[in-house]
Length: 446
Image (tube, rainbow, N blue to C red):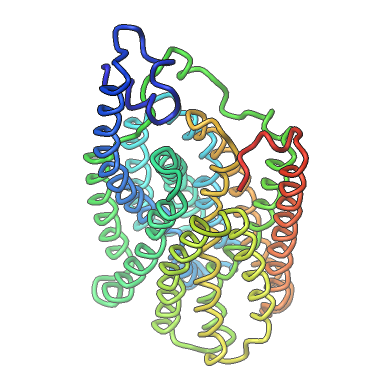
């Protein structure tokens, strides 16, 4: 008991201000105990990065493979792309939106409950999707059921990491976020290799087995750092709207909404673009998706290293967001495979930085680690709204333009550019606040 409280105190504040008199030690002995615990926490911290990596493999690795599902569902269901996009968009929406609730549940100390319910929903959705033959069935089991399972796990996994790290927080979150890339490579490769042999439904069940193995490992080794301290931890709101009184927090939230309206359009429709516009084979379109996800590994790690050692996460996020917006406008110029491959490599690498940096950037907007789950979850929910609307809007624009992707490309680039401009304004306000003390300067600067 004494050691658990000392661990919490050494992380978030002065131990002697938290421990009862019976637990307080002479200063030199107390420092020795803190040093020993910190060494133990170091090993645990990187283990938690691996566990979060597996959880994100199960959530975002599956979601970023949706282009494969999009093409398959269009073929067997004979429905337009905008309707199919709702399946993936709902999955993304719940993954983000439920962050506000799962983050608060994490703050209340119920991480183990989430680790049981989340994978149960995910596996139920995957298995039932393999039997689905109607559009509404896919919308229900993959969009709602699997999406709810994803939402129970994603935000808490990153929130736990943010409490273990400070100086290397961006790198730690980026390494966990590489689960998007490893999942986005592994799962499409499974589909590419197994689907011709055993059929798409049985391939989905194999993917479910992979998710099950990862979930079992996480249930064994995952360790949240925030300890049970005081009776108030189980109390509190799922949404803390007072945060929006901070101008920087509000600007950052608006930027996230705009960015996520356009972020996943290229991920959802790259396969359709390759097949319809460039006339490539189905197998080659899957290879392009694997390439798009694969370059996300350096695309997450390199910006995170630069953010940790040089410019800070928000500034780095601004750079990769602006660059991604420019690339989306260049997508309109692609007319053949020789032009599409460089776009896929560049966009997949640079836009991956957005997905890895924005959780680390959120963590810098608050000085309250014990409430970071709620604060991070609120912005995740806003990202979910943008992700829900963006791909279906793009699909509808493609239909209205007789199969041309130009309007969808303009929409994606414009929303991303607006988001980057809002981030620039937020950084300018931070700069002016740092030179002139005031309400804005109370938030940790990035």
